[in-house]
Image (cartoon, rainbow over all chains, first blue to last red; front, top):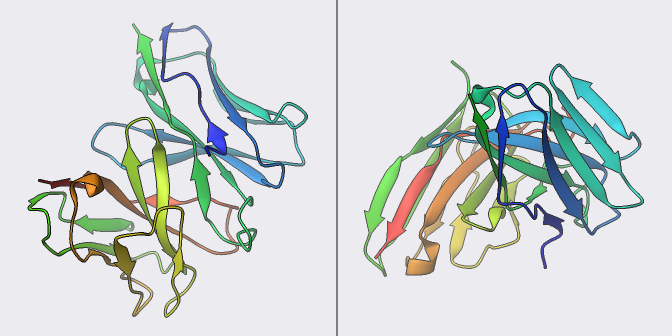
Length: 117
Length: 114
């Protein structure tokens, strides 16, 4: 049973426009949500996170929105740049017993973003 | 440059063979993890270690073992490899008490079991 789901395997946007990547989760015990970015042949790198007590966190061109009632979060990239083309993973923490003070994360399947020049 | 080093970067292995993926970090992080990445499934936690001398099972531990003899090293062993273990394996670390949940990943080890 996938507790964190990214239902869109891929997304293509034009340079300069907004990219919106979506993520749904099922476990209401998650206390932190994170987005990771992954380029081919590299490991994932941390992008941005949000605590479950907040509904928005912004860092430059990246904003994450959390809707707890809908168990949904989204990552907005504005404006999108060709260098943003990568696989984006949504991840959640805190849903496993004894995991609240560890870094154990549950990841979604990933969404491949392509930003066209 | 501080970070996580994984070896080998790529390996082809015959089914039934034993294989150890190596992972070393120089950030003095207490916690370390092994994930596997499979298309359509994202990253799944295999085993983890909160501190040297302790280990725990993740979501998909069967067929794998780990050890944590010291802070820096966290090897992952496949005792008898099977084709379903063909995957890209990522080692990661985190500083307990740091940004909640933030992991630092290595560049991955691509394993093919024939």
